[in-house]
Length: 602
Image (cartoon, rainbow, N blue to C red; front, side, top):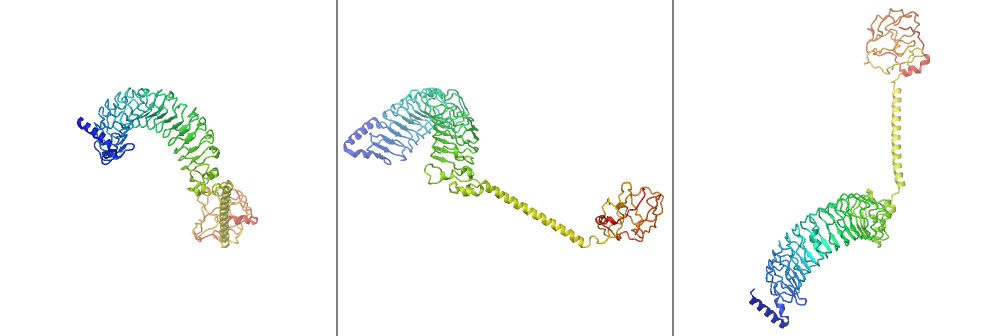
């Protein structure tokens, strides 16, 4: 716009002011204007340039979500603006000196544009600016002194850019800055020197960067109250890294690689340590934190153990979140005893199976969350059921589901009758086990008795059916002790005579192997040598296999007698069974009738 037309436009606006409400006619199409504030809003109106047909008395102008790519000479007549929103546009540069007339501007929002750098003088004229939002752009650096044209800045938002380092004088002149957001950048170390110039800084956000360590005395901003270091790669923290921060009240180290709890400043009130690699919380983890009121340790996948004295010195703790630690299966009964002011306790999604009643400070507790734990609903949790009912107004506690025993799995604890279903006495369990064992033993005993009875019955039937002869002749001499088993049953297919195994030297008493018929049967092994025969007292008849009467042998007779005939005799079939065979049992039964037969040694 040429200077001539500019003065014409100023005259028209000034003249129109005398016609009362005529200024309302200068609200561009697609915008909403209010003359009371006065303010104008052209959100998502499809604007490609910043309109000039606005009431020059505007205090607020919202041009977000448009296609504006430049602000050159468009704000020259809006010298009373206090709040300007140009976020979500296509600004690639701010130029130099385009905000010279905005001496009253307090808030400038330039987020979600395409700014890659700020030239020196881009913010000149913004002497009253308190909030500058440059987040979600493509800034790679901030030239020294570029921010000194806004000396009254209190909030500077630089998140979601591509800053990888800051010049030592980047924040020079910002003596009133209180909030600095550098999250989601590419910083690999804390910019300690640039931050040292911010003596009034209260809140610093360095989340989602590439920080790996916090060396000694990293932070020298003594007035800092809130510090956010979450979502970095910090695995090492020097013991005095936070020592100068005597005013620090809020600290977040969430989502880092810490393996142990670092030394904390003593005045902390809120501490977040979730998503780290802690394996244990020892007794020295939170020493001298007697002002700590809120603590969060959640989603630590390696946390398995918490010392009973870990929270011993956190006497002011009111909010404790110890949730989603899937390896945490047990909490010491005295862990929460010192927390007499605890009002909110979150123990969700751990692996706790039970919680002792005396482990919770029920006198001060106002909210308890035990959901998503594999709780075993037995006598140890009977005390908890009444606290989970809707009628309980002293404690807000969502109901929990039972994970065990199997017959209560999935049931809500508050809906289970404590005495009848949850608390199953040990006596009942023992009785059931004893009954089952007794019935099993009785069944086994009964089956064994039936089997034995059946076998005895089979043996009796076998004897009654003639397997053993009822009357057997008495072929044995008196007092004969058999030393070899006698076949109880000889079938026609059994070769005769049976094979004889040589016995030890001949005994004076006749053994079952000597029970020969009138004619001695030969053996393959017996005798090795035959002496000259001695005549029998009675003639041996091969056709008579069993002698009806054995007479005494002469004292000087040799044994065995000379057997000239082969055995078995030709007239007796080899497969013919003996006429009378006596089982050894019956032979012993009739031992009283047996006779001795004196014999001589071979």
